[in-house]
Amino acid sequence: MLIGIVGKPSTGKSTFFMAATSATVERSARPFTTIKPNHAVGYVEVECVDKEFGVQCNPRTGFCINSRRFVPIDLLDVAGLVPGAHKGKGLGNKFLDDLRQADVLIHIVDASGSTNETGEKVPPGSYDPCNDVRFLEEELDYWIKGILERNWKKLEKEAKHKGKNEEVFAEQFSGLGIDRETIAKVLKELAVEERALEEWGEDEIMAFAKKIRHIGKPTIIAANKCDLPHGMENFEKLKKEFPDYLVVPCSSEAEIALKEAAKNEYIEYIPGDRGFEIKDKADEQQQKALELLKDVCEKCNGTGVQKCLNSAVFDFLDYIAVFPGGVGKLEDSEGRVLPDCYLMPPGTTALDFAYRLHSDMGEGFIKAIDVKKKQVIGKGHVLKHRDVVEIYFKKK
Image (tube, rainbow, N blue to C red; front, side, top):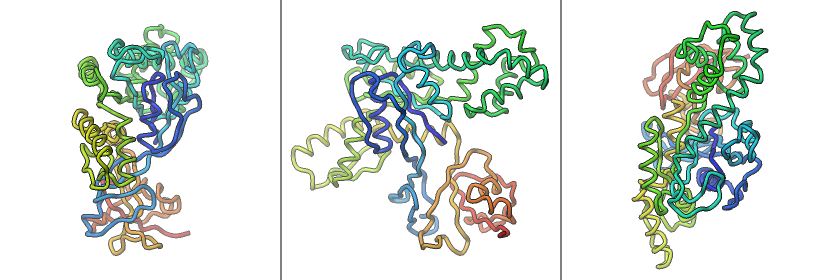
C-alpha cells in the first residue's frame, strides 16, 4: 500500500509529509523545493487487541500507547504540480509518473489562499483554493487520457483479437494498480463494455479516463494552514464546493510542533488527539506557545494529519488490521507479545493471510483459528478488522 502526497508547490506538502512521518525533508516557500520524491514511513492508528487479552503488546514495528497501536504505512511526497502538468509544464510528467503506484492520494491544499496556481506567494485570502482541486482532477484526467491515446491503435488491435474490452484495458492499467473488476465496472457504467474501440470518440475516452481516475486514484483533501487567516472560511467553502470529497482541516506545522514538544516531555500528546496536556516541565514562555497550539487544535479539531492517514487506509481503501497470534501463546520466539499487525485489503481470507505471513504457510495451509473465539476457520473464511488469527500449516 502506498499513499501519495500531492499538490501544487508551497502548499505545505513537504511539511505535511514531515508531520506524518517525522522524516527530515527540505522545506521552503520556493516553488519546486521537492524535485525527487521523498519516500518514508508514516503510521495509522488501530485499536490494539492487547486489552482484550489483558496483556501489554510489544510491537516489532510501529508503536503502541494505551492500546492505541500505530502501524507502519508507506508515504510518497512527489514534486509539486502546476496547471498544464500533463503537457510537461513544471515537473509535470515526472510528478504524474511518480504517482503510478499510489493507491490513494492526499491532496494538500493551501486553505489560507496565500499561494497562487503556480505556488507563488500572494496576499492571504486572495486566491481561491477550490481552483486547486479542479486543476488536480483535470491534470489526472488528461494524464490518463494521454496514456490511452498513445496506445489506442495497439489497444484496438488487441481488442479485436481478445474480444473483450475489459481484458485489454486491464493490461493497460495494471501499472496503475487498477484491477480488472474496476475496469469492467467503469465500462458497464459508461455502457461501452462491448463497443468496438475504433468507434470510441474523444469524449468517450475522456469520460472513461475520468471514471478511472475517480475509482482508481481516490483522493482526500487536506485543507492545510487552516489555523491561518481565511483558513477555516475556505475549509467550509471546499466542503460546500466538493461534497463528494472528504475534506479535513489541517495544520501540519502544529503537528510537527506538538510531536517535538511531546518528544521533549513538555506535553502529553498522542498523534490524532484533539488536544493535549501541558506538563510542569514547560517554562512560562513555552506554556504560552503551547496555549497557542491548543487554540489551533480547538479550531481545527486536532491537527488533521493523523485523521487524513487513518481515513486514507480504513475509509477509502477499506483495509483491515489483522494480528497473528496463538490460542495458547501470544508471544513470538523472542518473547514479544502480539509483535505484528498486518494491514490487509478488504475480502482477505485466512489463506490470503497465511500467504502474507509466509509463502510456506500458504502452501502448507491446514487450518486457521480465530483466537478471540477459539474457533476453527477454513481457508476461505473472510477475516474482519482486528481479528487475531493462528495458522496451522504443514512444514516442508
